[in-house]
Length: 136
Image (cartoon, rainbow, N blue to C red; front, side):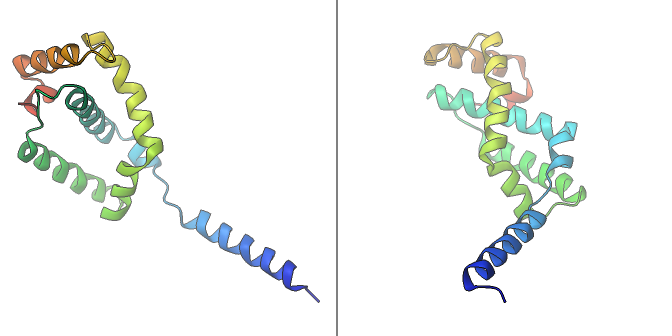
């Protein structure tokens, strides 16, 4: 006969396994080129505006892109909640930051130098790039 302690351990294992089985697999989102590109652009915009107080995000323009991407991700089989979990994931945010920061450095942004981030943002606005279109 199982002791109470053994039963609790067994129950904890079952709960852990069930939780792992219920965890969302974000592989499709992570490997999808459109999702990757949209979130990378969003990361670049965030880093520019986070480091340059002179530039702001054009929120209405960004909302349209977000809704379009959300609809696309739902088409991949994800719920709104799962999409939010993916976007809010610290792991994914760190992954995109690790990609975006070197890109900004190549564009002339220097960590700790707000003016360099502003210059990058203004150059993107001038070019009319995806990044620039979301900034003002």
